[in-house]
Image (cartoon, rainbow, N blue to C red; front, side, top):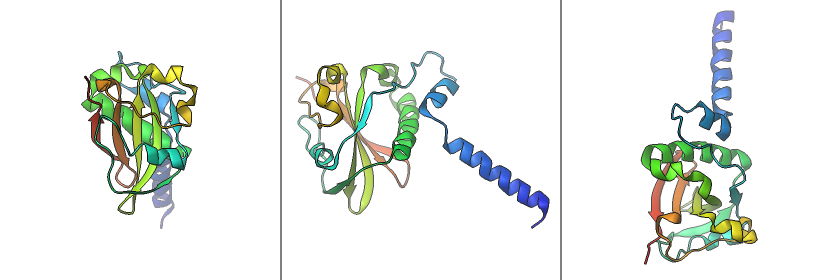
Length: 168
């Protein structure tokens, strides 16, 4: 391999590394949408295994089926999820993304059919009044679009199964 080829490969690898290490704050500030609030800092928590499985049983939105076990996502996996979630909400739910600072996120690493995924449990500012939200699964009945869930597939980087609580 020539020196020029080695330099080209090194440049490509460096560019890929820099691209994958952007933080959520950097992504939000780099966005062409100027009226979108920044991603909230300190509004998320990875639940421990026993509590992660509790999130699979919801009250007023469909429960998750076929859950085999739980696992603990790494900080890097959560950062990647949040980057993707920011873009997903901007594209598919812009009104929800506009109100992002009102939401708190519980992340649960779960396994279904030998595939690991992260379940996102989004709750509104109710979490501010409950100091246990960082460690205890918050299952809300009713509440409408203020409470929602979403699955993130680690292997594909795609989001699916967005569901909202029902409302009375």
